[in-house]
Image 1 (cartoon, rainbow, N blue to C red):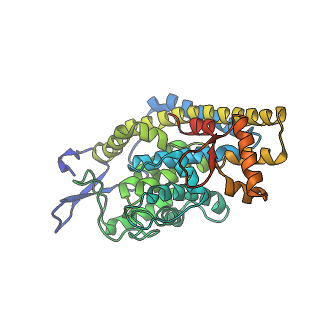
Image 2 (cartoon, rainbow, N blue to C red):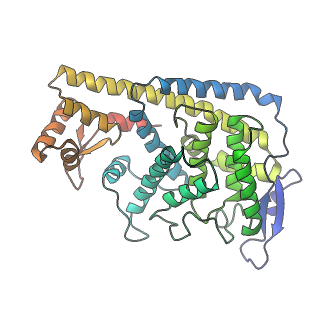
Image 3 (spheres, rainbow, N blue to C red):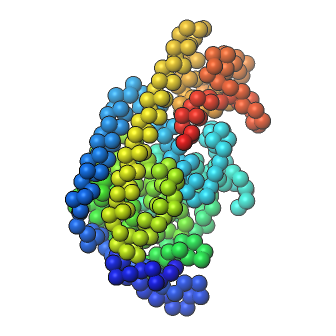
Amino acid sequence: MKVELFGNGRTGNLIPIPGSREVTHAFVPDALPPKWEWPTELWPILLEAHKALASLDGTGKHLPNASLIFRPLQNREAQKSSSLEGTYTEPKQQALFELDPKYGTSAEDPINAQREMFNYRQALRYRKDSRDTLPISLRLIRDLHRILMDGVRGSDKRPGEFRKHQNQIGRPARFVPPPPGPMAGLLDNLEQYLHAESRYDSLVDAFLVHYQFEAIHPFMDGNGRVGRLLLAILIEEWCTLSGQWLYMSSYFDANKDAYMDLLFRVSSEGAWIPWIRFCLEGVIQSAEDTQKRCERLVSLHRDFHERLRKGAGSVRLSAIVDDLFVHPVAVVTHVASQQRVTYPTARADLKRLEKAGILRFLEGGPQIAYFCPQIFEITFAD
């Protein structure tokens, strides 16, 4: 970490790390709230961000079956968040893995990447199940980390437990977060801020917390993924959305260099305005993009059922089509089990959907399977 980049406007203190050959200093961020006054110049973009978010939420509220749309959005978020960490998987193979999740047998096993994204989706769903019994808190953050790190790289680094050793971001270090001693007090302060009344604005507070969490970096591994999960949760609950509609990982991934640079500049220069502006612009772009994807998915769902009505449709085929929006890959054995029909009947059903232009045969898979190209295109295309 280049200590000379930290000027008088820095939002914390540099403290020496004795006995370390790799790094000489760590950065200890100031406690929340920051010593920063809200600038009037950000009002227009804040209002625009809330307007875009309200429009997206309005679309979500009026969907005939919102649950069919959530899963594609979560699949995209899992892929983009993992992409920020340098982990990539092929979407169709990832969808197959979702139907039959496994653990890797070694550190080099390619299944590990698929397991990482599977865990991310599990963590998103965990919050929905725990919302009535568990407030946004350090306990929730630890639970998210435990789920994320289950059986993947870093799973040997105390999943669900805050670190007891020094860590760093990058080698050589781009940033060195606080040692465990001062980190404990900062985490207590973070939890107090999570429970306090809004000081600025719900969106602004969410991005202040996101910065603070990343600056503290409380786990030995997985901090970025936990931070982005927490951000999605804060935006949903603090902005009182009807569901978890907005995710920021796609925007952060598309602007990765700016994202990393602006986080660092808050620490080194106190550059809050550029950071908040960047995030609010991301809300606008992400909300508008997500709204278009939702509308396309709803239209596609309607089109599929219209095709079935015009052809030799059935209640069973309709159920299979609905399930495609949850699992856009259909394996014959899985469909037979789910629909309680024989293997030949399930395969005949999938071939009928193929003939209707809804499915396409998936080449090279371990089992006979089909996929829905339109859902993949809407979900994952940039």
